[in-house]
Amino acid sequence: MMRIYLFLPSLIIVLVFSGCSVKSIKSSFQLPEISLEDEKEEIFLQKELLLNEMISSSKILHQISWPILKNNRDICYQDGSYSFGVLFATQTDLPKKDLKYFKKIFNKNIKSFYFKKYQVDSFPVVVSISQDSPAYQSNLLEGDIVLKISDLNVKNFRSKLKKSIRRSSKLKLTILRNEEIIRKEINGVKICNYNIQAIPSPAPNAYADGEKVFITLAAIKLARTNDELAFLIGHELAHNIFHYKYIKGSEANSLAINYNDAPKLKNFNSFFLYSSQAKEIEADLKGVEIAYKGGYSLDNVNDYWRRLSVFNPNMISSSSSVYKSNALRAIMISKTLKKLKNEDDRK
Ligand SMILES: [Zn+2]
Image 1 (cartoon, rainbow, N blue to C red):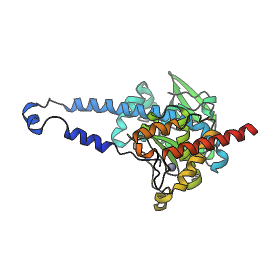
Image 2: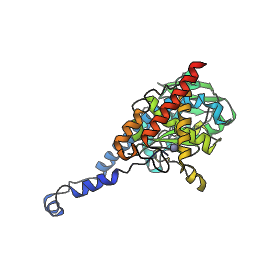
Image 3: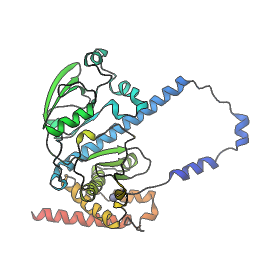
Image 4: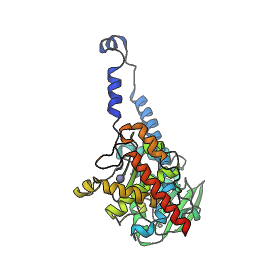
């Protein structure tokens, strides 16, 4: 975990104590008539916005993280499932009350004939393809609709996907693209199998739980370059690789639209795993190496800390029991990076 900023309560206090008195509100307003239909329509618009934001943020993280996961395979000791560099969204990724929105948003151009033919309520959709990944080389495209996986229909898509990529390097998909049905056989590669996901939160923060890395939507918005996000991903991956030593991951567990997915507290000990400054320093230093090895120059990466300090001025120069100050973190990162680049020059 990187840091928690609690600026919401102060915002609420400002809202409560400003404006007109209760008395004048009582006598001067008339509640407009609001039908259930009005409310439903507005809820749909807000959910659609949320899901599109989850997808665009997941895509950013997916593009940045795939080369990092690929180039660090030698240190993550994972020898499980194959990776294809593709991110899917499927109906059951959503909470139960939102299942109805999936078809409306992601399957709206599919003719009803297909649902009957394949006996399913919805079809998974490809939301991201990493550059130079096996999926990219096989010309799988964003927006492709998955009609079949391993020659089966797409009911329980995630478990079928997980099973297939655990035992075989070949992923068989039947795709619908502009009314054309295309069969794909993609050859996977072994990489580090940690899932890098976006999570809604108004505070810039990042978390690791062993299996997954979560970067908050606020952190994604605060970052201005891929280098900055690559470092955040590297820091959290360092926790997963060196502190959790998690080895069972699968690309099938990467959830792009599940806005309720959150870091799991795997066991009681994991709660205390991070409450040490030594572990956080290690995650910063190893995080630089991990991101650099992923192909990111990280030249202006410390601009992130400088921008973050504006939101939390006391962290500029004060260290806590867990974190060094933002100033010290920036200096540590710069010096580690300089050393890495010097070593590279000597090679
Ligand atoms: Zn950390």
